[in-house]
Amino acid sequence: NLGRDHLDFHRDLEDYFQAKASLFTAERARRGLVNVDDEHGRRLLDQAAIPMRTFSTAGSVADWRAVDVELTASGSRFTIVGPDGTAQRTGVALPGDFNVANALAAVAASVEAGFDAAAVAGGLAAAGGVPGRLERVEAGQDFTVVVDYSHKPDALAAALATLRPLTDGRVIVVLGAGGDRDPGKRPIMGEVVARAADVLIVTDDNPRTEVPTAIRAAVLAGTLGGRAEVVEIGDRRLAIRAAVHRAAPGDIVLIAGKGHETGQEIDGTVHPFDDRVVAAEELANR
Image 1 (cartoon, rainbow, N blue to C red):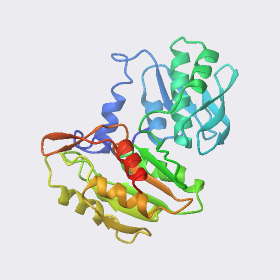
Image 2 (cartoon, one colour):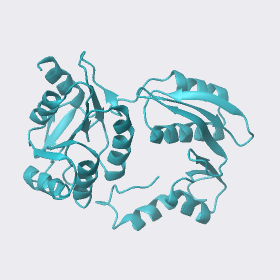
Image 3 (cartoon, helix red, strand yellow):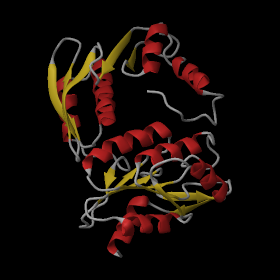
C-alpha cells in the first residue's frame, strides 16, 4: 500500500512510488509480494522484473486471499487461502479490515519465505494486539477510548472507518500533526477527520522545531466545511482531558497520531508523554 507519507523526503507521490519500486528489482530482491487491491500494487506488479506473488482481501484474483472475514470491535477472524488452495482459519486481535490485509501480508510473506502455514496462522491467532495500534484504554468507563498511531490521511480514514460502525454515539477525535514533516498533509488530515468525526479537538503532536500554532492552523484550515464540531486546544494533555470529559455513554474517543510513543518532542527536547498513560490518568480523574 502507498499513501501520502514521507513527502518531506520525496518530491511527490510518484517519486515515492519509484523509490518503493526500486526495492522490487533483481539487485535488491529475489521475489516480491504485493496487494492487488491497491492501484499502486497493481502498477508495481505490471512493471516488476522479479517473480511476484499477490494477495487480496477484497475478492481480487490473487495467490493469497482472505475470505469469510468476520470483523468485531476486538479483532477479526478470517480464512487464508494460499496458492495451493490450502485454507487456514486464523484471526488477529486488531479491529479493521486494513488489519486483515496487514495480517494476510505477514502470513503470505512468512510462508513464501519457507515457514509452515499452519504454524504461522496459529501464531497469528495467538498473538495479542500491537501497542499503539487501535489500542484500548480501559478504566471502567462506559465509553471507548482508543489510542492509534494514525498520522497520515489514509491511516486516519481507515481508523475512522473501523470505529464508526462500532457506535451509535459520537466519535470524538484528538488530532495533531508532526512538525518538520510533510506540511502538505496537514489540511488533508483535518479534512478527513472533520468529515468523519462528530467532534475534532486539534492539538499538538510532536512540533519538533516548528511553531505549534502554525501546525495547528494548517490542520484547522482543512476542517472548513466538515461535519464535526472543531475545537483547538494546544496542550495535548488538556486536549485528551477535554475529549474524555465530553464523552457520553457509548461514544468512542480516538486519540490519534502518537500511538506507542512515550515522548513528545518540542523545540529539540523530548518530554515524557504517553497517550495511553495520560488517557488512563484523565479517565481516573474524570
